[in-house]
Length: 490
Image 1 (tube, rainbow, N blue to C red):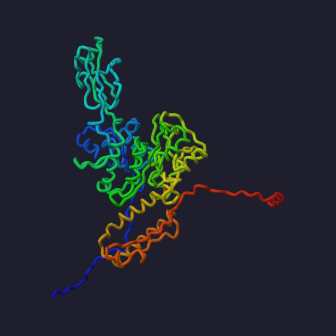
Image 2: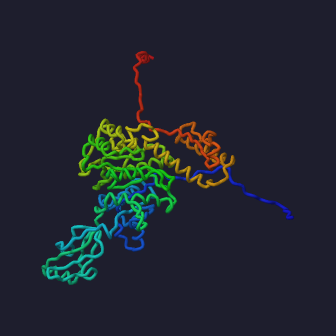
Image 3: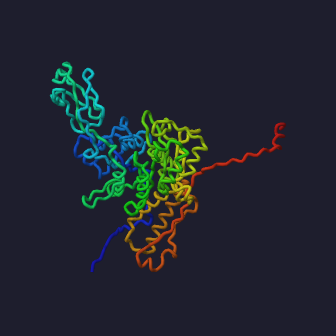
């Protein structure tokens, strides 16, 4: 028989569990990045299609994706647009990037392009050159990079090396041609963005990569983006579908654009939306585009940035709509650069059809639209307001991450009280900051936990959430009181 003496200390599980932090506005963007610019082959391989990359800064985006956001052509490189918007305009970090551009597949060939030198430089017609070029003269003399010239493969500027054979040939008045391959992200298709799982190769691609975010980075995407591709109805539909059941348990929302090349008049936009069936409750639709400097940008990208900025001032709780918040742009335009200036009734027409636009009123350029694409066909507040969709997704994801640690614990009263008491405290904290209406509760109701469900190992809680809805109309009633005229003589 063993006898213990002295003092014994034992630790028991804490009866209250704090919630896990979830970033409701974490963007996951699918599109094209100029990864051919990455010099290191191992780094370039990590950015190839089928992988995802997490970046916290514009510098990291440059190192890991070849992005030069301050100079890149956003029409070609959509992920550069997201990096510029997130890191520089709205201060949102991190961002998860899924590059779909493959330089081994998406390229075009220039053959015997005439090269005209001015003094010691010449410019090729297309930038983002892959590998090396073949530069020769009319006598088929081939000139060597590094010996006769240098070339900036991004800008396609050739610089002649002094006293080289090429310099002498230019002086002699010879003519030159260049042949080369260049990056062609325009060859990436909607099908590439949608992607899927290849059972033969075992490779996951496109939007299916959303499943890798949590296993890889322990982060749950909050907003899905596909700049330069989400205006394709099929892409937007698949994005919305991918918002539910990520890793079987997580949810998010998708921000998408409507086309601005064919839809140049605001009055045509709702009809297009209805015709293409873009009515998902998980979809936040944007029209038209915006202009920053000389570059056009997708409104969905700015909407995601404005959403993150709004969350930041709300303690990172996504209960507020991004509508009527400022966006960082100089003008609102269609695809051809024509400026769009909507009056309040015109902007409200789009808003009332579940389309978010830009209104320039007392606050400057602001997002204008609190509804998801489900509206006006679906008027259920939990489905029709983007703030409701985001709040439900965020709260549900937080429940999963917080309470997964208790799966397979003994299904007894201690477990029930731990979950119910802890979660009620979390709800109380949300109510205290105005993120939920008073009276939000959690309970394990007897009718939801009958003998058969308990025998099967199922424990059910019922959460009543008082979602906070946007104050879309603030009314003031003005009444003239003649009796107040007597106060003139007081």
